[in-house]
Structure formats: C-alpha cells, structure tokens
Length: 267
Image 1 (cartoon, rainbow, N blue to C red):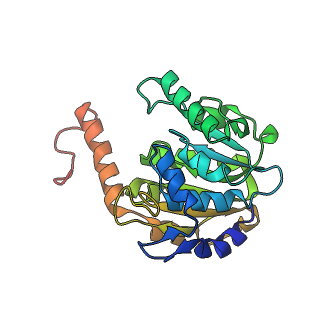
Image 2 (cartoon, rainbow, N blue to C red):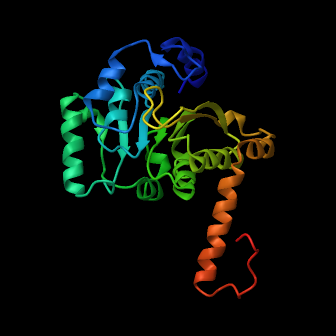
C-alpha cells in the first residue's frame, strides 16, 4: 500500500482539513453515510476511498467489525478493482442471522457484494486459524470491533502477520482512551508501526470522523526503529491505566484472592 502517497494526498480531499469543520470535498460520501444506517461519517468514508485506491496489486482491504456495511461501501464503491475481507460475527445484532441478512442486502444494493469475502467469524478466530502464507496481503486494515483495550490490542497484533510490507491501519473510535492506548501499545510492540495521524472529533456522531480516528503506517523496512519507548510514553493514557489496574485489584479482592487490608486506600 502506498501510504506515503496517502498522507500526501489526504488533506486536499477535504475542506478545512485539520479543523473540526473538515468535510470531504466530494459530496457523495455524505450521501453514502446517509444511505446506510451506520456508525461512521463522511470523512471516514472519504479517507477509506483514498486508501483503497492506493492498494498495490494483489492486496486487499480488511476490516474487523463491519456492522451494516457502511465502511465497506466507503472503501469499495468508488474503487471497482478493490476487494475486501469483512470479519464480522454479528454478535452486535440481536439475531445474528438477521444481522447477516441486513448486511448482505446493503452490499447487494450498493453493488459490492461480489467483491467482499464474508466468512462470518470474529477477527480472533480468523487470524488465529488462517495461515499467513496463503492469505491475501492486507494493504488497508480498519479495526472497528469491540473497543475495550484487550480487544483493540489483539485486533492489531493478530492482524500483523497478514499485513503487506507497507500497509495502513485505521483505529476507529479514537476519542476514547482504550483505542488510543491500544494503538500506542501496538506501536511500541511492533517497530514496523508508527502512529501518523490522530483525528479527534468534538463529539460522537461528528460528521468529520464520527468518534475519532487514528492512522498507523506499517512498514517492514522500518523494523529497526529505536524510539519505541518514547512512542509508548507519548501515547500513554494514565487515567485508563490506573482504572485498569484498580479494576484488576477489585476483581481479585472480590474473589478472596487479596487479604483484607492489602489494598491501597484509593483502591
């Protein structure tokens, strides 16, 4: 994936880039966001369209968490040669069969169903059971499944063996601390990864990038990077880490595994 070109071209695709008023210059992305009931915004769809257009031959777009198909539409409707892998087990839907049927109807209506591989499994199952050697290289990867810290981090770490030599990873709902901390942890664990954009929004359901979006550039040639500790410190969310630490202590204490009086006063 030509991620350097992506970063060079992205600002020109928007009015008021770099501000809360950023909106795609092409109005079709707002129309697309309105056409599919989804948890995404026109700016995200515009960004995905650009990224999918910069895939190298043989690479695919992949997303963990598909819901009703809005982000798939953003990546594929304007890129007729692009193909996608959608990892969705429909657990967010009340009835999984009905959820899959709704997604398939949306993809058919938008004319992209034939270019989407939809195995109907979670990202954990897919990446743990698939063999990287025989898998299409992922050039663009969107994580939009569960947003607790563990799920976020697993979603990035498990995808890494399947990425192309140069790829783009997108972390949705980056207004929240857990996705940001997971992205920082991933970039610290994998020197190939570097956070390049943090697109925060003033509120959820914002027309620019919904609930925030982070962009991570992946480059296997950068595996010798030496600033991983600095990246981790810079990206840490102390409040979240304190809350996770306290929750762990309280969990063990509730099960009698910490003697009374051994918890700190503020725990």
